[in-house]
Amino acid sequence: MMIGSLLKEYRLKQNKSQRKFIGSIVTQSYYSKVEKNISQITADNLIGLLQYNNISVQEFFNNFSQKSDDSYRQTKELENMMIEAYYTNNIEQMHNIKKIIHESNLSEYDKNYQTLMTNGFLALMNPKLNSEKLTSTIKNKIFDIPSYTQDKLMLYCDFMRFYSLSDNEIITRNILKQYQSTNDSNIQELILAIVCNILIFSIENDKFENVSYFLNKIQNIKTTPQLLFYKIDIEFFKNIIEIKNSNDAGKINKCKNFIKTLQDAGMKEYSNELRKFIKDNF
Image 1 (spheres, one colour):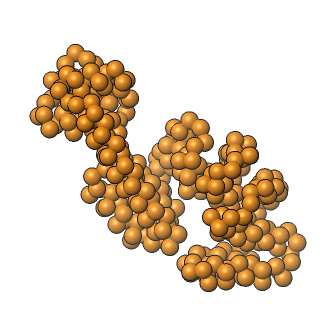
Image 2 (cartoon, rainbow, N blue to C red):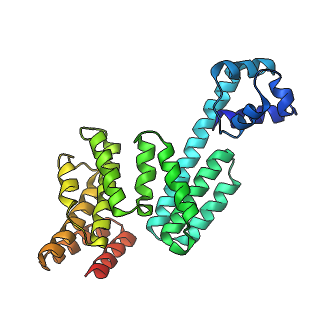
Image 3 (cartoon, helix red, strand yellow):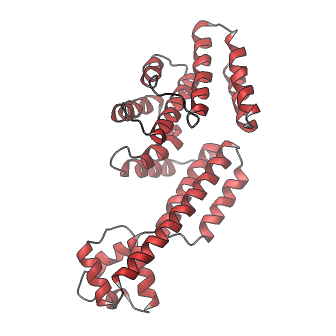
């Protein structure tokens, strides 16, 4: 929930135009951008607006906190649904998620952001739905976030396919440099997922000269239950690369054992994707 969206709710409840709501505290053009969550409002101006319109400051921030928690919970649920639909290649479900977003009580900003995410996943699932405008918008959204925060890492990891292998290698090197000594398990999980994608793209492009650099950089990340899936994934793709470099077809059996482990753990759809990956690359 953004401050501007909540201000707009209060203004509409009082049946006021923007001009009447702001008085002489801020300009209408500036305030219009605040309501659209394009511009941020200063603390002084926000409190001034609340007092001018007889809105309790405590009530406003209590309401903001509650709505923020609700919005955060909704967006996380939507993102989890998107990830599941993407990894099970369920295009119909992804379209249903777009309808859920449209009918939700999220702010317009959050609706637009979640819809962009859904369109991005749909473009990955069906390249015919991709466009230069969509790719550019997602790239800009990623790099509007000033540093490699957890949110930025998650967004980048989801849409690495919109970048070339060389661009991904440069970006990933910067990420590894920033988090070379992190003990945050959530960040470590994202780093492993990103490196896993680098291995996949390297195999698809048949370019392996930089693979050892990325594998060496993640050697010190200890295996934990939270990280086990990506550790198995990385070993799988590492073996594929070794087979391609040495023509040691015997390692295929090791890859098949990894697939069986994942299937036995209940990841049937993903196991089938790995089988298809082997078939497509040999």
